[in-house]
Length: 154
Image (cartoon, rainbow, N blue to C red):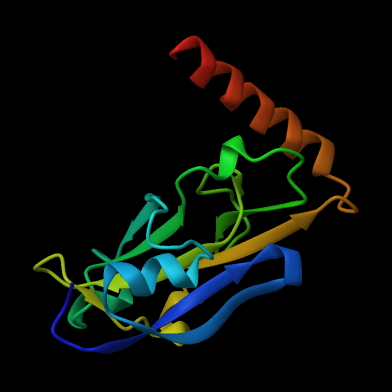
């Protein structure tokens, strides 16, 4: 992890309808795990990496934003919420993801750095869905297809 002991991250918690809430976390593996609701035995994945190349942010220390998720979120029984990322125009740029998420900045050396929410909002948005959302059935069907493909070994 980076040189800073604490960094700013963007937390995604669709169950609380908190999308892109700014939080301060320890700049460590434990800090990431705790922020997405896992203990130290949990696993996470980087579900999406958004490069800043060719954007307004190319002069900043951030070379990309990485979206971390619970590595076992697809396998949880009876999911109650999900989210997906869209570009600023509303076009889907990530798969539908279940559980909590966390967005961190990454510098050119691959180290985690604080994310600037004002810059992030210029490129991407997050849409949360719960069981009462009109597209919930479609999201759940997508999840079930992914789980079936995992069970088959892709």
